[in-house]
Amino acid sequence: MMGNLIKAEFRKTLSLKTWWVLLIPLVLLGFGFSYVWGLLTNNFVNYIGGSDSDLIFRRVGIDVSKLPVGLLSIAHGVNVAMLIPALFGVFALAGEYRNKTISTTFLTAPNRLSALSAKMITYIVWGVLYGVVSFAVAAIATVVSVDGSHLPDVAQWLAAFGGTILASVLVTLFGIGFGALLNNVTLAVVLLLVYFLIIENTLTLVLWSDTTVLGAILPNGTSNGIVGGIAAGAFGINTLNLPPELSNGAQYLVQQAAGAPGVVSWWASALVFAAWTAALFGGGWAANQRRDIT
Image (cartoon, rainbow, N blue to C red; front, top):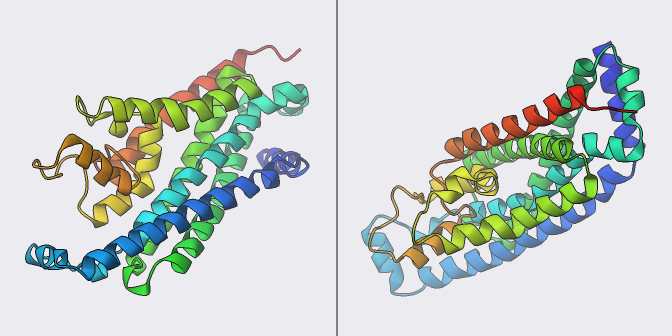
């Protein structure tokens, strides 16, 4: 029975244009941001490597010519692309209520638990697929814009790929829970974009001089901190070991360059964001166990 429910969910999503329409901004955003950051960071380290500043870095054991700035490029491209699977997730339940198909979904399953479980499994697979595409376009843009000496090594490529898949699955489930709780596609999409793009970034920046912890505990910062934390870790950048002599503004810019202001480590970000996802998804799940479908 569960297999049939999952097949039905895939047929349902594939019958709509949403899944491939959202791939267009994902590819454009992921490639564009990775390409621009790749050019910026690649040109910067090449400039530093060719100046007297290189001597300073070498004295502290850093070979600028071999810095894997390609990781920074990947992190920025992947992080902005993660908005897309989050939006895709919003349509999972909220979209069905809007399109009046939720009654069929629930009535053709033995119970709502089975229907929601099949939907969760289906969208986990979609999250993986969106993650693969996100990483692929970011990787292509990075290879095109970054010199070979500044590209990640094999282990770093694999870590970034794994982090992207994990982040994509979690943000997809986050979007499902967010949409299910609000039960309104338009409201959920608008609030999700406004919060992720404006509200949290503004709070993190404005309050940075008072606390650097917001990026390590809020949803956007922790979702970015998965792949961003992998990039930051390669450079030894996190809120616990930033040089104290750096100004607050400089500390923010350093972590922003890694794509995750406030990040402590990738795994800590993953755990915190997983908790946010579980809370929203669990809340949406509970709400739809009791919600009227007539």
